[in-house]
Length: 150
Image (cartoon, rainbow, N blue to C red; front, side, top):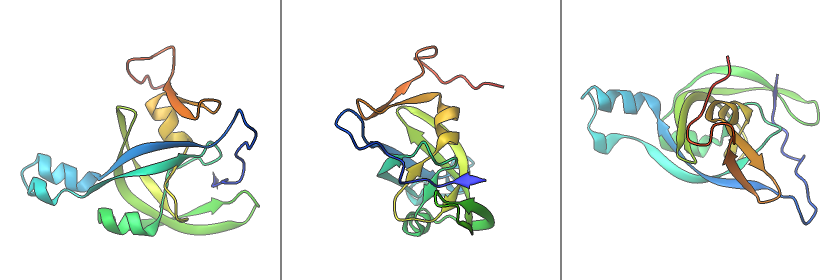
């Protein structure tokens, strides 16, 4: 189940939200551009501030960003919220997610009004959350590039 827990952030002076700048690109557009089938000026992308949510498994996009990127909702996924409520929400086509100089591609969930970066992106990009300094840091064991555990 997907946990879209947005209410589990520390509120004392030494801990807080981690917000990062993220670049989102329509992966299908990018593939068409690389094959010469789409004018590079037509590539849909955006840069936006995102909330790193360690309680969320997947990345979540609001419908306004989904529309801006021209993503098709290709299916539904059951999501479970922090309060235990479950809901069927949209699952997008692939999105290229660029964060802290690293990138990955994944389908995203559609709900809320904030871009949330979940655990799958953090794991894939080998990034750790430094809540005290409100930032993401590369895994010290692999500071120069992500390493995927298999």
